[in-house]
Amino acid sequence: MTRYLDEFRDPAIAKVMIDEVRRLRTRPWVIMEVCGGQTHAIVRSGIDQLLPPEISLVHGPGCPVCVTPLEIIDQAIAIASRPGVIFTSFGDMLRVPGSDRDLLTARSEGGDVRIVYSPLDAVQIARDNPGRQVVFLAIGFETTAPGNAMAVIQAASEGLANFTVLTCHVLVPPAMRALLDSPDNLVQGYLAAGHVCTVMGVAEYEEIAATYQVPIVVTGLEPNDILEGLLLLVRQLESGRHEVEIQYTRSVRPGGNTVAKGMVDRVFKVKDQKWRGIGLIPASGLALREEFAAFDAAQRFDVTAIETHEAKECISGLVLQGQRRPDQCPAFGQACRPEHPLGATMVSHEGACSAYYLYKKL
Image 1 (cartoon, rainbow, N blue to C red):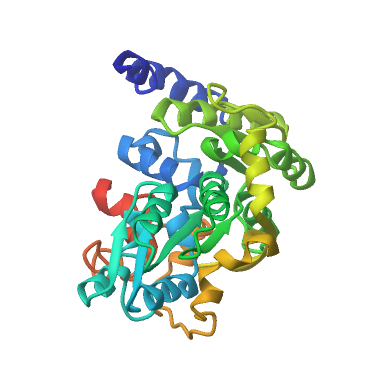
Image 2: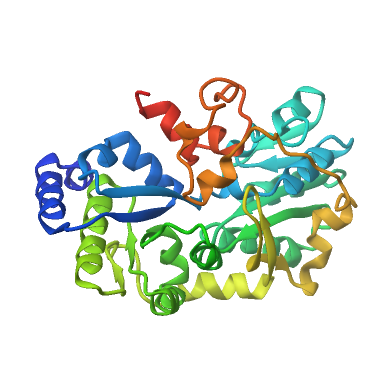
């Protein structure tokens, strides 16, 4: 395994690809890495410093924690604060700031907030605690939707009346289209998230590449994956092509994972979705189908009318759209730090602000 991983971090291989990018480039290009995991890999390994200055990397909206709207965070805190509730979540959601506090604060105030590593862990907690309501915070992109769908199906099959999910699933292709439609768009090519395409395939990307004449390369998360993806993109840009290519061939098949997609389609339906810092994007989210409405925590606990207010000095929305870098925010590293984040991009382990704070010497 070590040898396998080392292959994707080999400096000699990286140098060959960087030299080839330098040789091919004839003009400036702006490329967005969509995935927050790619942002961290780029900044941690210094890829952005090794590329020719004419190749500008901008960061995208591919951090599920960062784009979960404030309403969902506030609803989660409200539910978690109720007596008789066991609120479960992945750990990186606990410190995401809501309007006034976060889930970690709710726990310190007496809420029973528990970290789980799988939605099926939450189902097990519901089995073990029939006298209490168990809620799972089901967020994420196409990658986590199948697991959350499985949890709902499992709970339904067992008739677990004390299990619900607070859902906020978002879909990547509509967000990519929304960024390209923006009058402020800078993006000329996309490094697409490989793990998302492991589930969904690439058919929707082919429509985007053809419509907007923007090349898209589906890329992995290791440094040399990203460099190879960048090289493929620069080749396309310099030759005037706009195609979908798969760099991450060891995991992605063009048709994706049909079993996982079928499970998502069974439980969820597409809806318009608000993204934190970006706004409403048509057909970019997933909601429970009527058949599974009994598992909707927002309805069961009647928290849909909560009013929210975002920190005014936070520019994470512009960072998520590739229009600003984290270090261009006046609050970065001052009023906004990991121990006191103003926005989710500073606290999430996939957030761009977190990557800059951890790895860049500013």
